[in-house]
Length: 184
Image 1 (cartoon, rainbow, N blue to C red):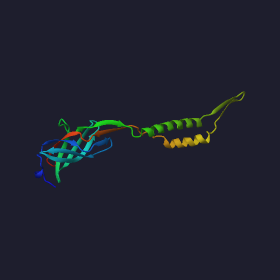
Image 2: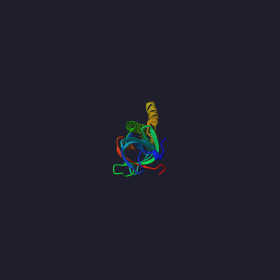
Image 3: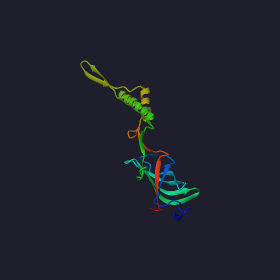
Image 4: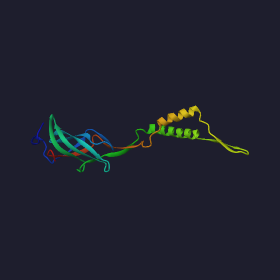
């Protein structure tokens, strides 16, 4: 393991590079590992760190803790910069629907269940001359009762959602890395 005196780049240097591994964030993901490749003085460097997303600003911030030059590893502190040397990089936000087909089927079955339940609760009213009104209800056919039980098992819970927001930071995104002494 190299020491800070052996680090082949000066502290405060801003290196241009690119993201090696693409990242996909959702709102409940914390820190993801990231690799950035940069060059300095004709040498290829690979920076390793942890990336976090701020969903309010759509920016990914990264703190690097190691860099590799050839077979040598160095403990560093570095930060990811965008093309204008601002801290962090903007991630592309988008909505995806990973369970849309399943939720559409569940929605249709929920409609069938509501119809069957309504049919099961229906009553027949007959007006009898001279004595008043007679109401009666009959149980639904066995097939509809079974269908109601099956659809009950398949309907989506009310808190489920078909659309999920994610943020992407693509591989080969041009970035910068600023290098600081370890612990800074």
